[in-house]
Image 1 (tube, rainbow, N blue to C red):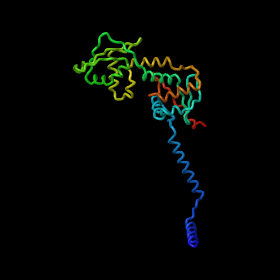
Image 2: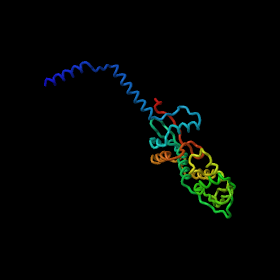
Image 3: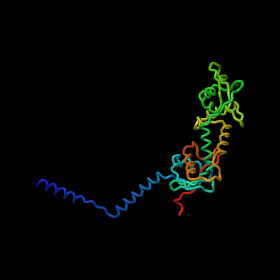
Image 4: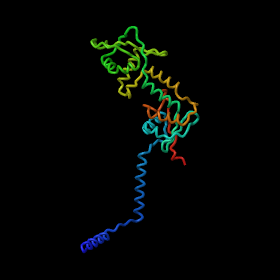
Length: 262
């Protein structure tokens, strides 16, 4: 008991020797520090837009840098404007979305990705005047050419430059294809800037798909309910390039930062 009493006395003395003090200034500084930390965390999770964008190209670049595809499904649908535009909100930002251009782009990319063109056999195989590198490239991407309706035979034992014969062309009621379309695809495949070679199409096919997508898309003047608007905006998350339609028309624009409206 005596030892316990001494220990208790020493402990109490130590407590008296190291008092904990807190004044009002300390509290104020602590609160300010916490507020700054909260603001930093909020800034990290907030999208930012320039308030003046001078061109369509600059606006597209601003959107592509700031909006991730996952954000489209987080957007709140507010309604339809003038039977042609969807008004959506993300955090404190308001956007206007062109219902026709957006639906057209989704349909166009779906056609590019999924459509396999029918082939029309040639009466006589046609030799293609390609260099050795082009022949190797064509053989490597034979499945892509088949998807676009082109078919070939390969003579492995022939001399380079005479190994490939064209045996079938894409079949279309309105378009005529020839070996120049094969050369165009080879040129696109050799371009290092090509983003997705599996969906490459000759320019004639690109125009054909754009026309089909435009005719089948939701038109300006069509009233949409909330479910339809939600579907159009959600589809933007699945697009390879959601910022404009195949004809170059913008799909969406940032309208205003609501925090700046008093």
